[in-house]
Image 1 (cartoon, rainbow, N blue to C red):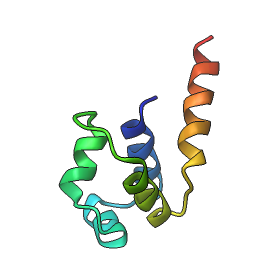
Image 2 (image 1 turned 120 degrees about the vertical axis):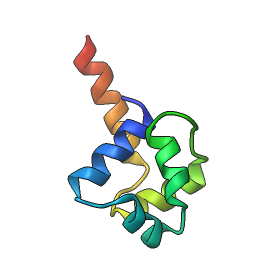
Image 3 (image 1 turned 180 degrees about the vertical axis):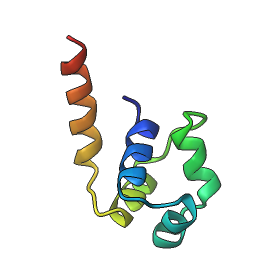
Image 4 (image 1 turned 45 degrees about the vertical axis):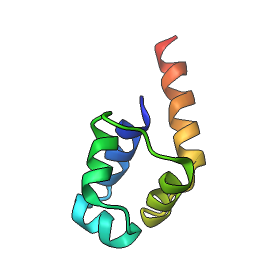
Length: 73
């Protein structure tokens, strides 16, 4: 799973809209949308800011990517 898919999954699991995440993180909802659709990739520092706003740390992305690779074996 890509970073955008992980972000989208966390956000929807928490029942959070893009606007709500924007207000909590300070990162524009249009920017987050482009990450979620795979149009662009976030810088690590900005990704951490968004993850923090949802109550997660950067390690969740690493963990999800690792689990995805294991699942495809």
